[in-house]
Amino acid sequence: MNKKILDLSLLAGVAIFSCMAVAHFLGLKLPLLFIYYDTPFHAYQDKIISFCLVTYACFLYAASKHNAIMPMVLIALSVTVLGLAAINVSDALASVLDGRSTLIYWAETGVFAVYLGWLFLCHRSTRA
Image (cartoon, rainbow, N blue to C red; front, side, top):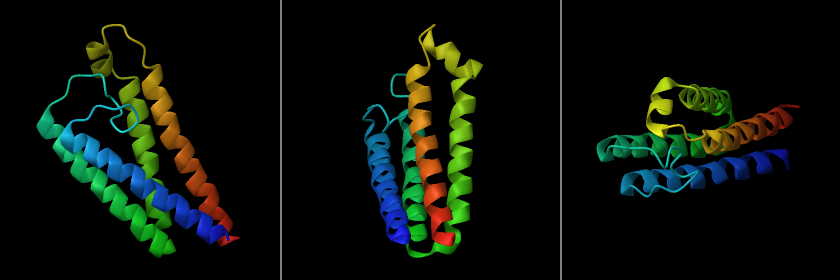
């Protein structure tokens, strides 16, 4: 049962990252699907991000089939959460926000942190 919950959680990630890839490719600036949805962007950069998001979707799918790569998934998502946190406190982001709050970006980063924590717990329970 624990492996099934982990696999379903990974497949949910496949769906989310795939939707994010489509949103970035098409320039659909929707919260959560486009983390920094209300900041200036360059379409070519978002196309590159969309390709990277497809990689995440593939990686999560592969983990649902081969549990041995779960540690790499957890590392990749950890780096992503840390990277988003670093962006959230950066001067570069502050310079385009004109004094607006970063609360929404922290909330979105938190969603990914919770997902990471959930995957960690699910993975751990399959190893017990």
